[in-house]
Length: 113
Image 1 (tube, rainbow, N blue to C red):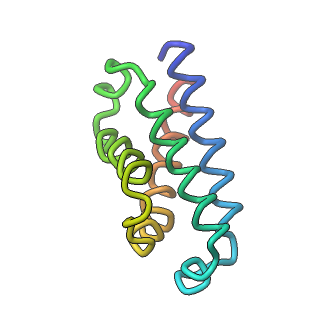
Image 2 (tube, rainbow, N blue to C red; image 1 turned 90 degrees about the vertical axis):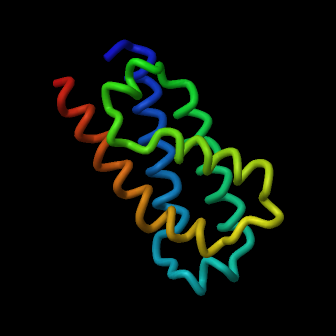
């Protein structure tokens, strides 16, 4: 893995840590009622998607079990369709997809050691 991709993976993990802290102690009901947390979580998803777009194609093809296009697509939807975004879908992403992404990225980093 080149230095650029390594740096981006670490930044994605940092964003994941941020979003985990944002939603710590939340359930769907509380999340849906908390405008500040919804907006902050969405901004963090945007950041993750933008970082993914900056990974090299070689890196993404080497780790093609991670749904890179879907992650970038979530970024695009969150940016361009925020007013019609279904926050229940965002919650599912935060609860299911983000922890899986974290585990995969940690695994990739561990391979590099």
